[in-house]
Image 1: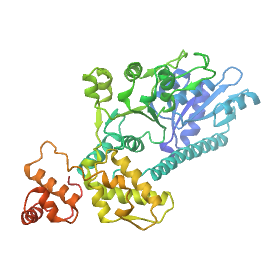
Image 2: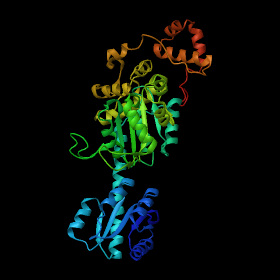
Image 3: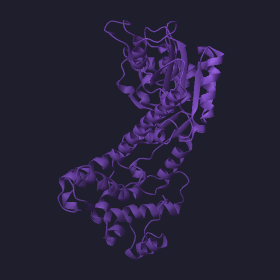
Image 4: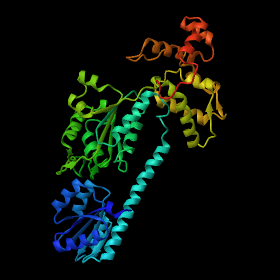
Length: 460
């Protein structure tokens, strides 16, 4: 650990004592800032992140716990080393119970202070590593929805990479099952907030009577049944990401409460007397088109403008058909490992079938079906005979695909032929009959459009 990368705040009302501590720490190579009162300390902490705070005080006159709480609201992982003059066992125990890492007696011994700082930094590193471990474990528990090379999902991945390093508000609009929460988590885990909490809120499940308490918390006695203090979602997500799922279903009251926080950056717990700073990154998601909801008067325009800074629109599965083989393979590996089953793969017939299904539940529906097959099928190769009848019969009713603005006539014809070939698998005569052309013409078009070659990744 490079000491020059460690930032320490020293708070001591006595200039001579402050300079002494400053000299000890700077000689050890640390970056040190000085404050002689609480206001200056809070100002410095709001502008810069400190690894450690060293506070020297008179234990008979001052209790440091309130300052620790204020500084922790700005930087939850900051470690506190207290140096009390005239200390008692009671004051030391109280300080440790309230979150101090170490409690030293004044005047400070140089060796003891440096050892305490090093121990505090080691403890901080363990906390950070624990957070990283949780992230890695969660990644292992989530299947990969980004498998495949479709241009639509590559565009989503590029946008995630661009916005992750910022704190910009993100709105994710897409059909149910397209992986909106997984995208939100991917943004969080690539951001500078990745070691802090990711808190998800289902806005559709928040009744008007509980919205404020859920989002902002309450203090004891704020209302009937409030038998103790409760932290709201904004406080739980402090320093991290607050994911507002189903934001389009938030009630009118909830929209107003949320807008007020987004505009002011402050909120007050119910029954509380002090404002708290909302240090969270907002990511919202909806399966509705919020602009249309605004036009119908069901969603506030001003809140929509606050949320719609960067919009990410994951495509439905029917618009990334070429990704289905890679998704199937990725999901099968994941769930076989998760449920301790032998590795399995899908027959080409099943892969072709899955590429023709409508998938109204999108990637989530495909993932759930693959998990079911990975668990229930004993053979190494999953064939069509193992696919549930309702799945097999869900297609073959109609042939369809999405025509996007800007597509040429050749692209439309190529896609129509490709979808027909997927539906008819190896029966070229059946495909020609459906298309209303001769088999020879079909063969010519297949060769002309390159449909007899594997589709390059990254092409839609």
